[in-house]
Picture 1 (cartoon, rainbow, N blue to C red):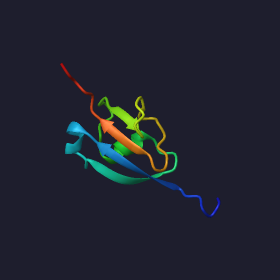
Picture 2: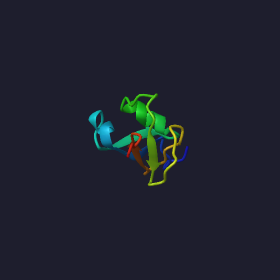
Picture 3: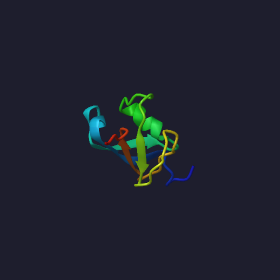
Picture 4: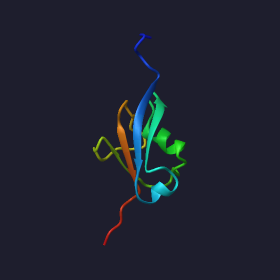
Length: 83
């Protein structure tokens, strides 16, 4: 491994709506390189069976299996309902 390589990345996580009750609205986290969104969800005890809307750097259609990269901003929303 080169001297400037790291084994961790930093990302910002933002929770919205009722997900804020169990987690801070915005939090910087350090994760091992290669971590997925599911790693973040486990860190904050977000249940696996809840459907979520996940955006990374503003791009929708992300999944729990999407790999998080250094500097990413991960926004996590519960399903939105409207009428």
